[in-house]
Image (tube, rainbow, N blue to C red):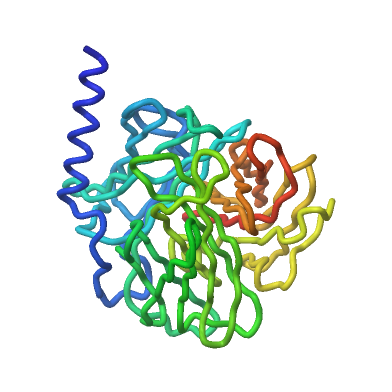
Amino acid sequence: MRLLRTVFTRLLLLVAMVAGGTTAAASAAQAATPDVWGFAYVDTSSGIPNPTYQAGSWGAGSVTVTPGVPGEYFVRFPGIGIPSGGIAHVTAISQTAEWCQIEKWGQSGADEIVAVRCYRYGGGPAKALFSIVFASSSGALASASQAYGYVFWNGSTIASHYNSALAVNTVTPTSTGVWTVWMPGLGSAVQAGNVQVTAVDSGQPARCKVGAWSWAASGQKFQVLCHNATNVPLDTGWTITYQRERSITGAFAPPKYFAYTFDNTPANPGPYAPVPTGVNFNYPGAVNTVQSSGTGMRLVTFPKVGILPNNVQVTAYGPGPAFCNLQTLWTTAGSVTYVRNVVCYNATTALNQPSLVTYTSKA
Protein backbone atom coordinates (compact mmCIF):
# COMPACT_ATOMS: atom_id res chain seq x y z
CA MET A 1 0.00 0.00 0.00
CA ARG A 2 2.86 2.40 0.84
CA LEU A 3 4.48 1.62 -2.51
CA LEU A 4 1.22 2.41 -4.34
CA ARG A 5 0.92 5.75 -2.54
CA THR A 6 4.53 6.61 -3.44
CA VAL A 7 4.04 5.76 -7.11
CA PHE A 8 0.74 7.67 -7.24
CA THR A 9 2.34 10.75 -5.65
CA ARG A 10 5.22 10.59 -8.12
CA LEU A 11 2.84 10.38 -11.07
CA LEU A 12 0.83 13.37 -9.84
CA LEU A 13 3.97 15.44 -9.46
CA LEU A 14 5.27 14.50 -12.89
CA VAL A 15 1.90 15.32 -14.48
CA ALA A 16 1.90 18.71 -12.76
CA MET A 17 5.41 19.42 -13.97
CA VAL A 18 4.67 18.46 -17.56
CA ALA A 19 1.50 20.56 -17.50
CA GLY A 20 3.59 23.48 -16.25
CA GLY A 21 5.88 23.28 -19.29
CA THR A 22 9.41 22.33 -18.34
CA THR A 23 11.20 23.01 -21.61
CA ALA A 24 9.76 26.09 -23.27
CA ALA A 25 11.94 29.08 -24.13
CA ALA A 26 12.70 31.80 -21.61
CA SER A 27 10.40 34.83 -21.47
CA ALA A 28 11.43 38.36 -22.38
CA ALA A 29 10.60 40.38 -19.29
CA GLN A 30 12.42 43.65 -18.66
CA ALA A 31 14.32 42.75 -15.48
CA ALA A 32 18.08 43.02 -14.96
CA THR A 33 17.80 40.89 -11.84
CA PRO A 34 16.35 37.39 -11.44
CA ASP A 35 12.64 37.03 -12.05
CA VAL A 36 12.61 34.25 -9.44
CA TRP A 37 15.20 32.32 -7.49
CA GLY A 38 15.53 29.84 -4.64
CA PHE A 39 18.03 27.53 -2.99
CA ALA A 40 18.05 24.84 -0.32
CA TYR A 41 20.15 22.26 1.48
CA VAL A 42 18.06 19.08 1.38
CA ASP A 43 18.74 16.86 4.40
CA THR A 44 15.45 14.95 4.48
CA SER A 45 13.53 12.76 2.05
CA SER A 46 10.16 14.09 3.22
CA GLY A 47 8.93 17.32 4.75
CA ILE A 48 10.76 20.60 5.28
CA PRO A 49 14.55 20.53 4.86
CA ASN A 50 16.78 22.54 7.18
CA PRO A 51 15.22 26.04 7.25
CA THR A 52 18.59 27.63 8.08
CA TYR A 53 19.86 26.85 4.60
CA GLN A 54 16.93 27.75 2.37
CA ALA A 55 15.95 31.08 0.86
CA GLY A 56 14.25 32.47 -2.20
CA SER A 57 12.27 35.26 -3.79
CA TRP A 58 9.01 33.97 -2.34
CA GLY A 59 7.15 35.76 0.43
CA ALA A 60 5.83 33.24 2.95
CA GLY A 61 6.38 29.51 2.92
CA SER A 62 9.11 26.89 3.07
CA VAL A 63 10.81 24.49 0.69
CA THR A 64 9.34 21.00 1.02
CA VAL A 65 10.47 17.58 -0.20
CA THR A 66 8.44 14.56 -1.33
CA PRO A 67 10.09 11.17 -1.99
CA GLY A 68 9.66 9.22 -5.22
CA VAL A 69 11.33 5.92 -6.09
CA PRO A 70 14.58 5.14 -4.21
CA GLY A 71 17.05 7.96 -4.79
CA GLU A 72 14.40 10.33 -6.17
CA TYR A 73 13.23 13.56 -4.52
CA PHE A 74 10.71 16.23 -5.54
CA VAL A 75 11.79 19.63 -4.21
CA ARG A 76 8.97 22.19 -4.09
CA PHE A 77 9.97 25.87 -4.05
CA PRO A 78 6.99 27.91 -2.79
CA GLY A 79 5.56 30.83 -4.71
CA ILE A 80 8.16 31.00 -7.50
CA GLY A 81 6.51 28.83 -10.13
CA ILE A 82 6.97 30.06 -13.69
CA PRO A 83 5.21 28.80 -16.83
CA SER A 84 8.46 27.82 -18.52
CA GLY A 85 12.22 28.34 -18.57
CA GLY A 86 14.71 28.81 -15.78
CA ILE A 87 17.71 26.78 -14.72
CA ALA A 88 18.51 24.30 -11.94
CA HIS A 89 21.72 22.91 -10.45
CA VAL A 90 22.28 20.26 -7.80
CA THR A 91 25.34 18.97 -5.92
CA ALA A 92 25.44 15.77 -3.87
CA ILE A 93 26.70 15.89 -0.29
CA SER A 94 28.15 12.47 0.46
CA GLN A 95 31.07 10.60 2.00
CA THR A 96 31.36 8.36 -1.06
CA ALA A 97 31.39 8.46 -4.88
CA GLU A 98 27.83 9.65 -5.45
CA TRP A 99 26.22 12.39 -7.48
CA CYS A 100 22.79 13.92 -7.99
CA GLN A 101 21.20 15.03 -11.24
CA ILE A 102 18.08 16.90 -12.29
CA GLU A 103 15.24 14.89 -13.82
CA LYS A 104 13.04 17.84 -14.79
CA TRP A 105 11.36 20.89 -13.34
CA GLY A 106 8.12 22.75 -13.84
CA GLN A 107 5.33 24.82 -12.37
CA SER A 108 2.68 23.37 -10.08
CA GLY A 109 0.20 26.05 -9.10
CA ALA A 110 2.15 28.90 -7.54
CA ASP A 111 5.16 26.69 -6.86
CA GLU A 112 8.12 25.33 -8.80
CA ILE A 113 8.94 21.61 -8.45
CA VAL A 114 12.40 20.30 -9.27
CA ALA A 115 12.79 16.52 -9.50
CA VAL A 116 16.21 15.27 -8.35
CA ARG A 117 17.69 11.79 -8.72
CA CYS A 118 20.79 10.63 -6.84
CA TYR A 119 23.06 7.72 -7.76
CA ARG A 120 26.18 5.98 -6.57
CA TYR A 121 28.94 5.11 -9.03
CA GLY A 122 27.75 2.15 -11.07
CA GLY A 123 24.13 3.30 -11.17
CA GLY A 124 22.54 2.19 -7.91
CA PRO A 125 20.21 4.64 -6.16
CA ALA A 126 21.76 6.83 -3.46
CA LYS A 127 20.14 8.30 -0.41
CA ALA A 128 22.29 11.38 -0.73
CA LEU A 129 21.97 14.78 0.84
CA PHE A 130 22.21 17.57 -1.69
CA SER A 131 22.39 21.29 -2.32
CA ILE A 132 20.05 22.74 -4.96
CA VAL A 133 19.43 26.07 -6.68
CA PHE A 134 16.74 27.23 -9.11
CA ALA A 135 16.62 30.59 -10.90
CA SER A 136 15.18 32.35 -13.92
CA SER A 137 16.41 35.65 -15.36
CA SER A 138 15.53 38.05 -18.16
CA GLY A 139 16.45 41.50 -19.36
CA ALA A 140 19.86 43.07 -19.91
CA LEU A 141 22.71 44.08 -17.63
CA ALA A 142 24.26 47.52 -18.11
CA SER A 143 27.49 46.69 -16.26
CA ALA A 144 30.49 45.89 -18.45
CA SER A 145 32.26 43.95 -15.68
CA GLN A 146 29.28 41.74 -14.79
CA ALA A 147 27.80 38.96 -16.88
CA TYR A 148 25.38 36.10 -16.44
CA GLY A 149 24.12 33.43 -18.78
CA TYR A 150 22.67 29.94 -18.81
CA VAL A 151 21.52 27.17 -21.14
CA PHE A 152 19.26 24.18 -20.61
CA TRP A 153 19.99 21.55 -23.28
CA ASN A 154 17.22 18.96 -23.14
CA GLY A 155 19.15 16.29 -25.05
CA SER A 156 18.33 17.50 -28.56
CA THR A 157 17.85 21.27 -28.48
CA ILE A 158 18.12 24.41 -26.34
CA ALA A 159 14.97 24.37 -24.24
CA SER A 160 15.72 27.43 -22.10
CA HIS A 161 18.46 30.03 -22.13
CA TYR A 162 19.41 33.49 -20.90
CA ASN A 163 22.18 35.92 -21.83
CA SER A 164 22.65 39.19 -19.94
CA ALA A 165 23.87 40.86 -23.15
CA LEU A 166 20.60 39.74 -24.79
CA ALA A 167 22.63 37.75 -27.32
CA VAL A 168 21.67 34.23 -28.41
CA ASN A 169 23.54 31.34 -26.77
CA THR A 170 24.31 28.37 -29.02
CA VAL A 171 25.11 24.67 -28.51
CA THR A 172 27.01 22.49 -30.98
CA PRO A 173 27.18 18.72 -30.42
CA THR A 174 30.69 17.54 -31.36
CA SER A 175 30.75 13.83 -30.45
CA THR A 176 28.99 11.44 -28.08
CA GLY A 177 28.76 13.13 -24.70
CA VAL A 178 30.53 16.30 -25.86
CA TRP A 179 29.07 19.74 -26.70
CA THR A 180 30.44 23.23 -27.32
CA VAL A 181 28.51 26.09 -25.73
CA TRP A 182 28.98 29.65 -26.99
CA MET A 183 27.73 32.62 -24.94
CA PRO A 184 28.31 35.71 -27.11
CA GLY A 185 28.45 39.18 -25.62
CA LEU A 186 29.68 37.93 -22.24
CA GLY A 187 33.34 38.16 -23.17
CA SER A 188 36.33 39.12 -21.08
CA ALA A 189 39.94 40.05 -21.83
CA VAL A 190 41.17 37.46 -19.33
CA GLN A 191 39.63 34.36 -17.76
CA ALA A 192 37.04 35.52 -15.25
CA GLY A 193 33.89 34.19 -13.62
CA ASN A 194 32.64 30.73 -12.68
CA VAL A 195 30.80 27.89 -14.44
CA GLN A 196 28.43 25.25 -13.09
CA VAL A 197 27.11 22.22 -15.01
CA THR A 198 24.48 19.62 -13.97
CA ALA A 199 23.14 16.60 -15.86
CA VAL A 200 19.41 16.54 -16.69
CA ASP A 201 17.99 13.08 -17.41
CA SER A 202 14.83 11.38 -16.14
CA GLY A 203 15.55 7.99 -17.68
CA GLN A 204 19.09 6.99 -16.74
CA PRO A 205 22.05 7.89 -14.53
CA ALA A 206 24.04 10.77 -15.99
CA ARG A 207 26.67 13.18 -14.77
CA CYS A 208 28.15 16.21 -16.52
CA LYS A 209 31.06 18.61 -16.04
CA VAL A 210 33.01 21.44 -17.68
CA GLY A 211 35.56 19.87 -20.02
CA ALA A 212 37.23 23.07 -21.20
CA TRP A 213 36.78 26.84 -21.09
CA SER A 214 38.08 29.56 -23.41
CA TRP A 215 37.34 33.26 -23.46
CA ALA A 216 37.62 36.27 -25.76
CA ALA A 217 36.32 39.82 -25.90
CA SER A 218 33.41 38.52 -27.98
CA GLY A 219 32.18 35.85 -25.58
CA GLN A 220 32.71 32.74 -23.47
CA LYS A 221 33.11 29.21 -24.89
CA PHE A 222 32.66 26.05 -22.83
CA GLN A 223 32.92 22.35 -23.48
CA VAL A 224 30.37 20.20 -21.66
CA LEU A 225 31.27 16.52 -21.04
CA CYS A 226 28.78 13.89 -19.86
CA HIS A 227 29.13 10.25 -18.81
CA ASN A 228 26.82 7.44 -17.78
CA ALA A 229 26.73 5.54 -14.48
CA THR A 230 30.31 4.44 -15.06
CA ASN A 231 32.82 6.16 -17.37
CA VAL A 232 31.18 5.85 -20.79
CA PRO A 233 30.44 9.08 -22.73
CA LEU A 234 26.69 9.71 -22.83
CA ASP A 235 24.33 11.90 -24.84
CA THR A 236 21.98 13.44 -22.29
CA GLY A 237 20.48 16.72 -21.16
CA TRP A 238 22.28 19.26 -18.99
CA THR A 239 22.27 22.77 -17.60
CA ILE A 240 25.15 25.23 -17.62
CA THR A 241 25.41 28.61 -15.86
CA TYR A 242 28.11 31.23 -16.33
CA GLN A 243 28.44 33.95 -13.68
CA ARG A 244 30.80 36.92 -13.49
CA GLU A 245 30.53 39.23 -10.50
CA ARG A 246 26.96 37.98 -10.01
CA SER A 247 25.72 35.26 -7.69
CA ILE A 248 24.78 31.83 -9.04
CA THR A 249 21.14 32.99 -8.96
CA GLY A 250 21.97 35.95 -11.21
CA ALA A 251 21.42 38.46 -8.41
CA PHE A 252 23.71 41.21 -7.13
CA ALA A 253 23.67 43.51 -4.07
CA PRO A 254 21.76 41.73 -2.65
CA PRO A 255 23.35 39.37 -2.20
CA LYS A 256 26.23 41.44 -0.87
CA TYR A 257 27.91 38.25 0.32
CA PHE A 258 28.80 35.80 -2.43
CA ALA A 259 31.98 34.29 -3.87
CA TYR A 260 33.35 31.75 -6.29
CA THR A 261 36.68 30.13 -7.10
CA PHE A 262 38.38 27.84 -9.60
CA ASP A 263 40.72 25.28 -8.01
CA ASN A 264 42.80 25.05 -11.18
CA THR A 265 45.97 23.63 -9.60
CA PRO A 266 44.63 20.85 -7.36
CA ALA A 267 48.10 19.40 -6.75
CA ASN A 268 48.99 22.61 -4.89
CA PRO A 269 48.81 21.76 -1.16
CA GLY A 270 48.00 25.40 -0.38
CA PRO A 271 46.50 27.35 1.03
CA TYR A 272 46.66 29.27 -2.22
CA ALA A 273 44.57 31.88 -3.99
CA PRO A 274 43.71 30.71 -7.54
CA VAL A 275 44.74 32.95 -10.42
CA PRO A 276 43.93 34.86 -12.50
CA THR A 277 42.12 36.90 -9.90
CA GLY A 278 38.95 36.99 -12.00
CA VAL A 279 38.25 33.32 -11.24
CA ASN A 280 38.65 33.90 -7.49
CA PHE A 281 36.00 36.53 -6.85
CA ASN A 282 34.72 37.61 -3.47
CA TYR A 283 32.13 40.27 -2.78
CA PRO A 284 32.84 42.38 -0.65
CA GLY A 285 36.46 41.85 -1.67
CA ALA A 286 38.32 39.31 0.48
CA VAL A 287 40.63 36.62 -0.94
CA ASN A 288 39.32 33.05 -1.18
CA THR A 289 41.81 30.23 -0.59
CA VAL A 290 42.03 26.52 -1.36
CA GLN A 291 44.13 23.86 0.33
CA SER A 292 44.51 20.10 0.48
CA SER A 293 42.78 18.00 3.12
CA GLY A 294 44.04 14.74 1.64
CA THR A 295 44.09 13.09 -1.77
CA GLY A 296 41.17 14.42 -3.78
CA MET A 297 39.90 16.53 -0.88
CA ARG A 298 40.02 20.32 -0.97
CA LEU A 299 39.16 22.78 1.79
CA VAL A 300 37.80 26.01 0.32
CA THR A 301 37.66 29.12 2.51
CA PHE A 302 35.39 32.04 1.64
CA PRO A 303 36.16 34.92 4.06
CA LYS A 304 33.90 37.88 4.87
CA VAL A 305 30.83 36.37 3.19
CA GLY A 306 29.69 33.95 5.87
CA ILE A 307 26.04 34.65 6.54
CA LEU A 308 23.03 32.36 6.65
CA PRO A 309 21.05 31.21 4.75
CA ASN A 310 23.60 30.22 2.10
CA ASN A 311 24.31 27.70 -0.64
CA VAL A 312 27.27 25.97 -2.31
CA GLN A 313 27.54 24.26 -5.70
CA VAL A 314 30.53 22.44 -7.22
CA THR A 315 31.40 21.11 -10.69
CA ALA A 316 34.40 19.11 -11.88
CA TYR A 317 36.64 20.55 -14.58
CA GLY A 318 38.87 18.99 -17.21
CA PRO A 319 38.97 16.04 -19.63
CA GLY A 320 37.92 12.54 -18.65
CA PRO A 321 35.11 11.11 -16.51
CA ALA A 322 36.10 12.46 -13.06
CA PHE A 323 33.35 14.09 -11.00
CA CYS A 324 33.12 16.02 -7.72
CA ASN A 325 30.74 16.39 -4.80
CA LEU A 326 30.71 17.91 -1.32
CA GLN A 327 31.88 15.67 1.50
CA THR A 328 29.85 17.43 4.20
CA LEU A 329 27.65 20.45 4.68
CA TRP A 330 29.69 23.67 4.57
CA THR A 331 30.10 25.55 7.85
CA THR A 332 29.79 29.25 8.65
CA ALA A 333 31.77 30.66 11.56
CA GLY A 334 31.80 34.38 12.17
CA SER A 335 32.07 35.94 8.74
CA VAL A 336 33.82 32.96 7.14
CA THR A 337 32.33 30.02 5.26
CA TYR A 338 34.36 26.82 5.08
CA VAL A 339 33.65 24.19 2.43
CA ARG A 340 35.12 21.06 4.02
CA ASN A 341 35.56 19.39 1.59
CA VAL A 342 35.15 19.36 -2.16
CA VAL A 343 35.92 15.73 -3.08
CA CYS A 344 36.61 14.46 -6.60
CA TYR A 345 36.56 10.90 -7.91
CA ASN A 346 37.55 8.79 -10.86
CA ALA A 347 35.15 5.85 -10.49
CA THR A 348 35.28 5.28 -6.71
CA THR A 349 38.86 6.48 -6.19
CA ALA A 350 39.48 9.98 -4.87
CA LEU A 351 41.91 11.99 -6.97
CA ASN A 352 43.19 15.52 -7.29
CA GLN A 353 40.95 17.15 -9.90
CA PRO A 354 40.29 20.77 -10.85
CA SER A 355 36.91 22.01 -9.69
CA LEU A 356 34.71 25.09 -9.84
CA VAL A 357 33.03 26.14 -6.60
CA THR A 358 30.41 28.83 -6.13
CA TYR A 359 28.88 30.23 -2.93
CA THR A 360 25.99 32.59 -2.33
CA SER A 361 24.04 33.88 0.63
CA LYS A 362 20.63 35.49 0.66
CA ALA A 363 21.77 38.79 2.14
